[in-house]
Length: 78
Image 1 (cartoon, helix red, strand yellow):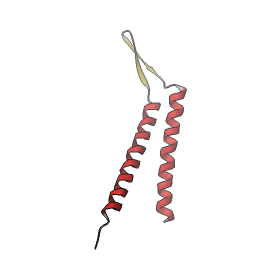
Image 2 (cartoon, helix red, strand yellow; image 1 turned 180 degrees about the horizontal axis):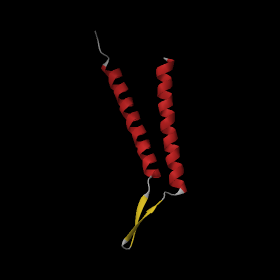
Image 3 (tube, rainbow, N blue to C red; image 1 turned 90 degrees about the vertical axis):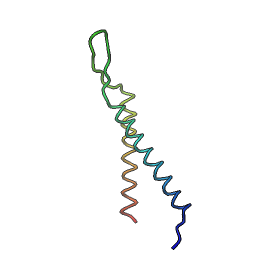
Image 4 (spheres, helix red, strand yellow; image 1 turned 45 degrees about the horizontal axis):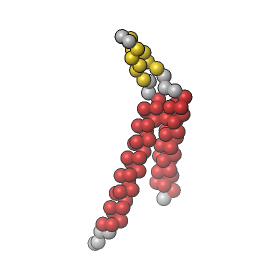
């Protein structure tokens, strides 16, 4: 039995890269939809995210959902 170490390391590298990318995109989505605490003098107020941040967050979530759907497709179709 022979192990193709080059192919194994290539699969590991791609898997690690895609995983870090998807988790990073999901983190961007969470940060884009989170409320921000704004300090004004002694009082702290909670501000809703802007329209641009919310649109970027929804786009990040959409890319994450497409990546998950593609992974399920690869598993089911194979």
